[in-house]
Image (cartoon, rainbow, N blue to C red):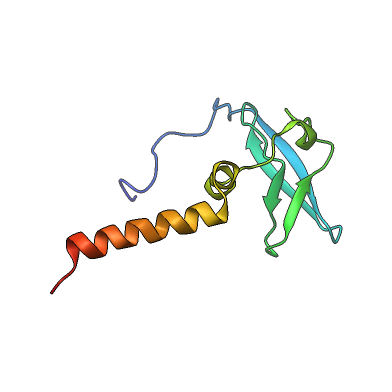
Amino acid sequence: MRLGSQSMETESNVQPAPRQRVEYRTADGDRVFVTFAAEAEIPQTWTAKSGKEAFLVNGDSGSSAEDEKPVRTHWDMLMERRSIEELEKTLEDRLQYYRSHFAIS
């Protein structure tokens, strides 16, 4: 008998947690089945063992892709406020400042 690596408790009268089996499909038509806990939030995509992205089949999506706002990066938000010319001028001003105050002679 090994102690520590195995439980001494039997599996009789043990109820496993509720689960759900979800199907995904790749663009090639490969089917991928994944088991999740019943209360788990199901992702819309899953990476198959082949490395390809698989999409949820007949899933109840909480929100559709059409309802989501497009992703705006920091660069996108900066470009809404400044032009390239303004950014180049600001960069040149800051470089002059650092060269004049922190230059090593």
